Length: 291
Image (cartoon, rainbow, N blue to C red):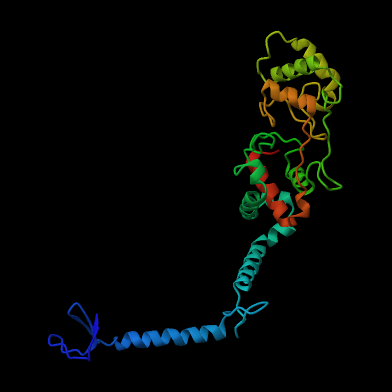
């Protein structure tokens, strides 16, 4: 590289910078005016932006700008606008009873939309996105309701939960027949095999099912009923519906009888507003064909 005095290029007629690389001289071509003005405009814009919007960090914060704009504030405004729009549509739900909502197609449509969204946010992690449940969590599409499937019963269950921290929660406790020494292991196996036959499932070979029926009558019928069809007042499940919350495998049943389960559902009345709970009741009712 060499540096000479500026010259005029014979081909382009443009002045050179005086720099030369391997015999090639650099032309001193000025930038286009439009590009320069655009560049100056971006610099001016940056200075205006620094004044108008939050820009510079400080020791314990940042410059707020003359407009006082923040992304958090904008989000809060959007959320407030969304809530206002929601309440405009949900105003009818707040005043109407569940029976009135069910009788009004427009209110039902709004409640189902609200309920589906709330279900996805709060209930789906346990019950599944479609309410189909999973092992240990009830299937809400099966038409079997531990604590009743009417609109009001479902609303009560959602509001107060099951064995939850709520004075009005549903409360029941199945004894741990094995852990507490109430039944012997062979009696538990007999009872488990009898319960399987109630649902049309084959018992294990060599197990005395008749003895299991007696064990059931002496220890289980008080809650599940002589016909094993359950009792919604006690949250005792119907054992004849081919729906098993903890599985129908013989080992699953033996574990349930031996140790009990007594799972907990949160009391959503402490977390969700009344309109959302009404909407959830309508939506959950629609999943399982409640009565």
